[in-house]
Each structure stands twice: as structure tokens, then as C-alpha cells.
Length: 198
Image (cartoon, rainbow, N blue to C red; front, top):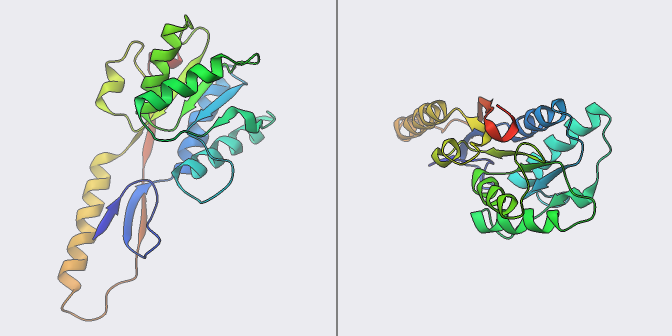
């Protein structure tokens, strides 16, 4: 078995994914380069297990620190699930605050698309009033209005590496000791679209 996803399993299974800390840092740097300073993390986690939410929040914090922008834990907004409605609820709650954010780093595209809808319903212009960034580059991100800036994992490479690792396990099952468990990181890129002025 080989796992595809954002973090390795704890039971010692081969895993293929992206460097979540680095990807979130690059997405946050993009927002900072556009003059955004109150960047909220929708789906983030400040403490607790080293899951995807925590790793991406760590990358966000690294970018803030490098830019000299103080970290505000109140701008990290956990969610119950990573669905559209959770992104919409989080964005609505953030816009009800006195000190509103000027950008949202959503930790997947479903959250970001839900947030875009909530911002639209509240009359907030994207990218005028706020910038929004997602993760995963799902197909819907190209067709939303505005189209969504997002972190795109190299899906072709994920598939290639995963199949190679799986074949090695299958072919090596009868030929002696199994190779050590591997955690393989593949590339990603930031796709800049309309939600951050692209």
C-alpha cells in the first residue's frame, strides 16, 4: 500500500505528497507581496498534531516572521471539515469582526470556494477588499468568479512515484527483506488567478 495525500501515516506506510510547510509559506509570501498584512488562515491549526492543517499553518507563520509581520493567533480559524459550507461560515465569521482580515489563506480549494461565496454575499470585492488563495487546484478553481489562485501539487508526479513505490513493494515481496518506508515529496506551484489579481 502507498498513501497519497498531504501527510504520511503513522503506521509506517510509503507516502507521496507535497511539502506543505513550503507550499503554505510560498502562498503567504505571495499575499504579503501584494501588500496584505492581516492574512487569516481558514482551516488552520496553531497547536496539536502535525497534520496538514498544522503544517500549512507553520508555513504561514514562517512567511510572516520572515516579513516582520506579527503573528496573530486570532487569525487562524479552525473548521469542522474542509467543505464549501465550512469555508463560507469561517469567512462570514471573519467579516463580522471589527478588525477584518485583508486576505484569506484557505487550506483547500473547497474552503476557498465557500469563502468566495460568503464574501460575495456580504459585498466584499475579491481581489479588491480581500485576496483569497486555496490549495489543491481542483477543476472548479478555474471556473469560479473570480477564478481562484491556488497551490497546485504535481499530480502527474504524485501518480508516477506512487505507482513506482507500489510496484517495488509488490516485486520485492518474495525476494527478501522489504526496503525501508519512504516519505516522498513532489513539487508544487502557485497558480496565480483572479482572486489575487492574476
